[in-house]
Length: 114
Length: 130
Image (cartoon, rainbow over all chains, first blue to last red; front, side):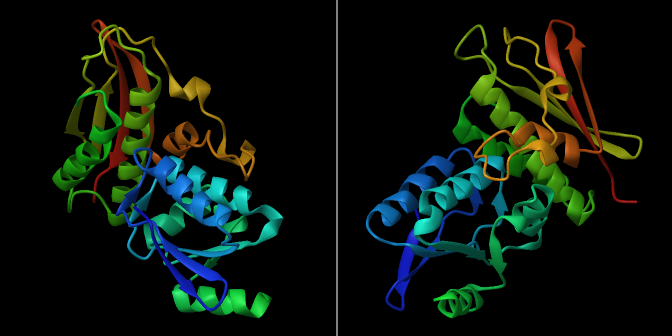
């Protein structure tokens, strides 16, 4: 389901690979990203460029991934369309996640943190 | 709709198609979110008397509102989300669940629930394009 791509030595960009991240696929998304973390990925960009809709299950899965990384690494998100941005605002997730316009901005921000 | 998670997204997309150009853009998203959350909640938590019990729905225009009515599958215990939803501001930011019902209350223009005949029905209303 997910598409992942390594940028630089240690920044992994992940795309959910679905148009809608909802209860039907949120668990698989979380497990697949968790497997990347278990395999050593610790600095992640989740790019929602091709994902037009998230529900509370999708948001829950994303929060689960953030908890999995914890203090061992970093996770940022990018590519939110206006609907997904609105969901982040309503659920106050814009205070939890660092949100960037696109993949390039997100990667740059992670590089500057290191 | 069959009482299966795989049916939720196609059903919501079909309903949304019917509303294209009739709801303001921002309300299309609220409709999508509310109906997705409500159907998912029914599939995951309503316990029908028979496995093959379906979730029935109806989309109508009443006055200046579009109203989606979702009927609980037969045999499910009544569940009024207005009595059970947690305010989104009370939910721990790192919680992985518990936002669905609050999102429905926050995003629908009107929420109603009650029995109609022998079945229970959730009504979600959204103001039409003026």
